[in-house]
Amino acid sequence: MNIQENISLKPYNTFGIDKKARFFTSADSVDEVKNAILEAKRLSVPLIILGGGSNMLLTKDLHALVLKIDIKGIQPIAENEEHVFLEVGAGENWHGFVMQTIQMGLGGIENLSLIPGTVGASPMQNIGAYGVEIKEVFQQLTAVDRETGETVVFDAESCKFGYRESVFKRDLKDKYIITHVVYRLHKKPVYNLSYGAIQETLEQLGHQKPTLEAVSQAVIAIRQSKLPDPAFIGNAGSFFKNPTVPLLHYNELKAKFPAIPGYPNEEGMKIPAAWLIEQAGWKGKRIGNIGVHQHQPLVLVNFGGGDGAEIKALSESIQESVAEKFGINLHPEVNFY
Ligand code: FAD
Ligand code: NAP
Image 1 (cartoon, protein in one colour):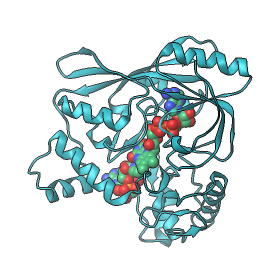
Image 2 (tube, protein in one colour):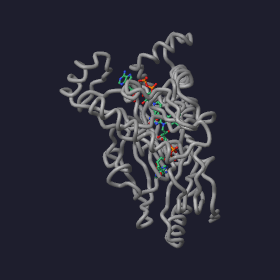
Image 3 (cartoon, helix red, strand yellow):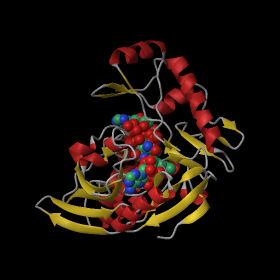
Image 4 (cartoon, helix red, strand yellow):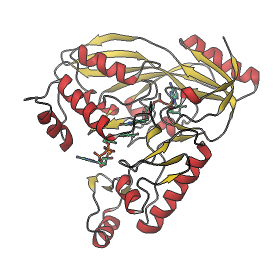
């Protein structure tokens, strides 16, 4: 196993934060993942797992062994009348996988086009966008137990998926390394066009009826028009989760702020965090090399040379002012290190 020392993590996180890993290695097989667990023990340092680094904020140098997951492969492993089951290596690029399913004529994740990162990280926060979450097509995953080195299979129920949540972000945080994920894709696509913008964009792009390619193209067009590309401006997508408040609280807010948007769900009303942050006066704010994106205030950005600790401090200031104005606590979606 090739272990490098004192490596800059700047190319490995989409915020583009220049912090170092004391030790750094990668694994392209389950055996290498198991070796890395032993190496971290031998070096007496924690093991930190890295996918595409698109949901991480590095606030300090990591005195750890950073393990980049590079396990590749997309294999059909079973099928029935309605579905094809694809087993995917955790190191596959998510968007590349989505494109491959579309080429294969398989539906289910076309709305999740252009999400950065790896397939292995997709169950971590049950990635979602434009009305679809991976839990709808997730079959199972395989992971290595960091304590015993054993391989364990998790089905959807044991992953305890929630809104941008799973058991791996909560009770089982830092306990497992995901090596493969099996997705159950539809032979006959069932389109989800519930997000108004998709329907509208399909029409603008001249598509009379939805196809997998057309829906994917529409999602890509919307995303490119709205979200900053990490290749040009450092960011990790939505910094906070959209909060859900009880209906009573929402109605009180509605009386005070009649324009407040809300989407009903099982627990009450989901309020777009972007709206709360904008109303608290943060949209487009720049502090030195970091700031709040001018079009999408839920995205915190590094204009270049910014520091992770500064971004963390900015996020805390935003949380304070939103709590003061609306009585709502915003919770980060991004993982802090
Ligand atoms: P990383 O950032 O590398 O890791 C995230 C966390 O998962 C870390 O704690 C890491 O230790 C852990 N981890 C990673 N891989 C493994 C593994 N194999 N086993 C165990 N633990 C692991 N997210 C959405 O849900 N919807 C969106 O629409 C969306 N849009 C985005 C747009 C932009 C421009 C950006 C920058 C981000 C966006 N995100 C979105 C967030 C991010 O892309 C996803 O959360 C993605 O799944 C993270 O993948 P990653 O491989 O980069 O994970
Ligand atoms: P948007 O369309 O401006 O909408 C703002 C928020 O309102 C969204 O976050 C969304 O919640 C909610 N919303 C809008 N229409 C909805 C509907 N019909 N039903 C239920 N909820 C609705 O959002 P955006 O920022 O441009 O992002 C578009 C999509 O991409 C969203 O699904 C968003 O989650 C996803 N995205 C995620 C990240 C990330 O890092 N997690 C980054 C970029 C984009 P939901 O978030 O619950 O959908």
